[in-house]
Length: 409
Image (cartoon, rainbow, N blue to C red; front, side):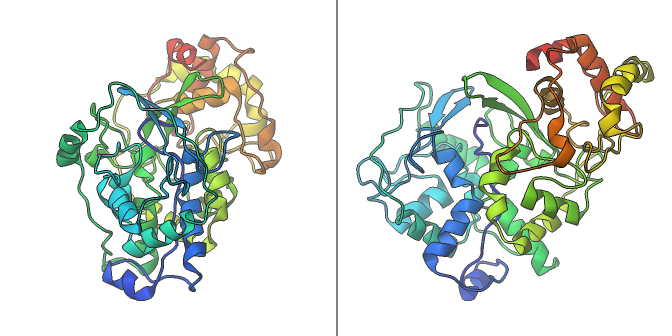
């Protein structure tokens, strides 16, 4: 899992129309029970992925998140009265989500992304609470947090970086856009993974959604770098994607533009696939409106492109095509790809070295047959073919070095 960010998640279901209009959120879909709405919201927030250990009891906590300041473990959010949140009131949960303060008054770490949850409406919090109360209580106390992770400095951190407040609709935008904004900016907390952070691990507000590097551990405990792609409509981001492309990707994990792998697997498999098509489209509409700067730094040179051409032709062209446009039953397009043009090549290199690991139940046709090349090509060769795809078909990105490839193994 990423440091300070609980990957995963996107989208929420709205509740009672009157409370929504009071908080500036779009109108809700057809009413269901509070518990059903709460489950939908928990699915949308991908709560299970961050609060459930592999093979462990659902929502019992203990998932670890490595940060530069120590290891943080997710909490038990089952209604167990001793080790979970069984003694919490709905107001306690609201304070945690809106203010980052636990029932005992201690400050929470923003690995629990209250900096985004603060935008979630009170009615949604109440429904989440109603659903969590129906979970099976599990008596499980997760490990304590790292010695360097003291809670009192969070008061200063909050003063510097946290701006609490509920979502307010933009009256100049459509209801669909506002719904998408509410979903993305609130419980979905997309910016937590896709926005760069400063040295104190706060999101850089002037670079929202421009892409960011994540550190995730594998099943063996080894940390790997990933790049959460640029979500803006810059050429290095989602310029080539349509709203339909995005909505289909959210729903199925695959579109004409890309297929999910790596950190997005849990988001697709455990969260987005559970959501209503209207919510997914609203999300896509909002994301497509995000603006960001084009790449203006160092770019792959023509001679570096030439150096990787033969490797691409031999190893990649059959699936991705000479034009880099790929095919739905052969391989995803590399021309205009946000992964290929990432400010950091980590995710591209992981796909080449290890092959894309797909989420359970998601099928990509011929895409899933891509082999890993870590034992086939040298670091220099992988760097060369990476430079070819990062500098061809009007792609613009910085060059990759053999040392970067070695770091990603």
